[in-house]
Length: 125
Image (cartoon, rainbow, N blue to C red; front, side):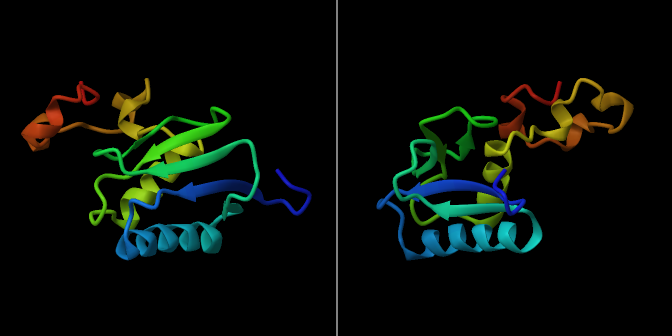
């Protein structure tokens, strides 16, 4: 945390993304800036940073790993602000609520409502 009470997270975005994708990413950055103490800032020369790439699926490591930390955002042209926000939360160390060890005390997973393509992930069990 910086002396001003903010948390700064440097990032860079692959040139594979187009204008629409950059806009979605910037909208997510702006939402974090407006609603939290977290500031995603363009990387200058920081050693630790988020390297946003298009690797076919959206995913991120949980929490800070150090160095150039990959965050993948789907295919170019398909990036959504909500997905960026979701992956930013993972970068910050937040896990899915349905994966908590005490989840069954707080939520009910309706197995029949899970889309078939999502069942393969196994995190719902």
